[in-house]
Length: 155
Length: 370
Image 1 (cartoon, each protein chain N blue to C red):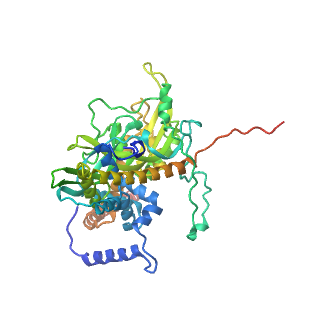
Image 2 (cartoon, helix red, strand yellow):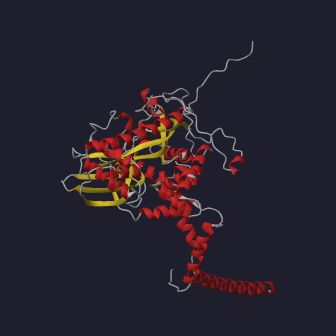
């Protein structure tokens, strides 16, 4: 999912996009979002949090058939709210607490009363990612080669 | 022959304690942190991730620190750690066409959509030691310029538009990508499995083989169609949800090597290709990989196999530095019994030789006397 291609706000985001943003969140962002919740729901762990591997695949020639490039560490968690909603969190890296928090917010966004708070958090995360992306893109753009043709000086 | 021998426990324990001391070094100096290694020795971290075949900057930095900067030792440690983790699944293949580009250069087209972006490169530096780095002097922030929103079309797609280059690699319809971490290698390999092996192969070994192809040992007439470095999204199918979700982004380096022509009665002459894809920022490795990938396709193109870089079994069997160091370094472990057996053998051979010499000498003397 591309943060720059999403809608202007998190309202109306599909679950796939929400999970993509949660995966890119920092643990501090998620922790702050959780700490800021007025009414904290009761949460039951279902699976994990646990760390394992995902085999990252590439494509031969860039666009051909798949090959196995190498593995990446992935942490994931599944939780259930007392009200029944199941939340999944998964992202690259070793941070199991972050996976648990992401699962929590995935569950919370399914509850209408929590949705606005989750959307506010997602907006924050998306804004940070967009800012980082544009900064990097602009820094890279400054290294673009502007070719010019030398005019021969003989006359 | 291996025989259990007791002893050495205390020496080993003390040696490891000494190693820990030497690793830490002078205590009056601050210890180097994992964050510092990730931030300031990033390309060392990238190499460890690529050759350990495990993308995790923090763990790779930890391995570099633990190994005192010995890259192959760090790779070994990270590989070993990898075996302790369960595998959750296979990602959707990463889409390098949609990369968040940090660097992109082509040696074949000057003006290409998106342009030539040098990024943070060592190229065009004078390779002079910089005394200012002896001190921690402030470093200027990078300049910025408005970014071009043009999508960075792959160079291979530009040539493909004219039909002048072979397509991206296709495997037979029902082919499942091979995985050398799950099944022992059986030669000959399919190209997908070769690419997996090359992606984790030793940079120095692949560089030397790539160089050999340029020097005439399996000439492939290469041009760098494109090298690009940047971040790609990693997506995983979540069965409980029925769709793929993003796990975040990883940085990769991709090289499209364009090589000289092949054609037959059936296919018109066209450029052929070698492909390189490596974790992290590792241009040298991606370029070497693409040259070796192309050289290893010799049989596919009906080329004569005359050089080491074209010999699949030779290249792939020796490209893994963890395997290589394991077998080379095991020679220093106790071989007392093997050696005793050989010593015994050579003594007997020597005795037989001397007896024969003595016999010959007496025969010679006899002949001389006659």
